[in-house]
Length: 231
Length: 194
Image (tube, rainbow over all chains, first blue to last red; front, top):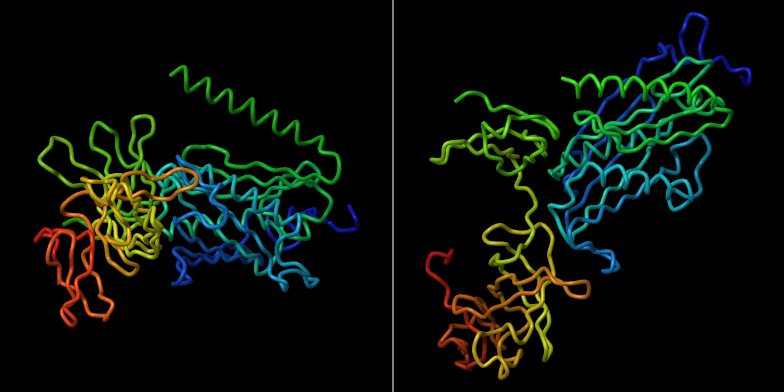
């Protein structure tokens, strides 16, 4: 695989982790006093800042106002110095727009928006240093910021990525592993309810392994559910 | 008192058979879950079941609701309505300003057709009002002052002095003794604060 050995014979990855080991996580809440809520998170070498404003009156076009719940407005951006090569457009490109949309969908599932009709909640996330798993790090940072802002949520959201190398799943991919040509799957969960807020898979090569894995997971899940319902 | 229990969003606190849900919690499948990160508070209020809520050190953001008494500042007037900024809901200040509208028909309860907005409010006045509607797509919060207790509380005259109410529809400047028209509120003594 491109001359890069993602998993050694001893079962160690490029950065010395085991296959299912996560990177070191460090987080801080309430980093800014101006915003209603903020958080900073580091997952290995990926670093992100999240800021939450609101709920406040809907800004911009009033037609976006919803009568029964709050509008969630997400903006994802990457600092120009976050990648190995200087980024020209920190936000507003196709990739960022897609990421913003995914974040919005994730938090619409988690935040109790029906408590704040006709208002808006802004979530701004910035990647300060990018080393893989940007989406999941952003979700984790934004969750902490929403908690810090005191906005009610059904459950906190947590997210992680997983990739496949020769049938072995690798948890919490770093940049080299993401770009290594394997498939990667990002998953955002509401852990207590066991609900999936967002599931996204990118695969550059054939993903024949995944159908098998997902099939197995679904079968396992169905078994669990049938056991539970019988009780 | 035992140390307060901490919780995070999604924590299962108890069954609905043990407690009544208060603020910062939500119901699902017969259980009460936390929706905020904070301290769990159980309060007995004479009823059989205690009320369970989750509290934080900082006040959570409040929104103006229908029926709420709000304190607002008039920003502009025109013959049909006055535009205001809502500053307080009840006695809690809002972090952000919310815009509201007092239509001509909602200024007072009687002789609605004879109301003239510029004889009721002036920009800069502090007004007590009640929320009657959250508004529709085009408009924002709709407010009314059609009660004796609602209307202008603080107003400044053209000379810049704070005016004294002399009737329900007039205020006088203590410096120039000029009278100006306002929809004056009869402020209830219990709401008066220094």
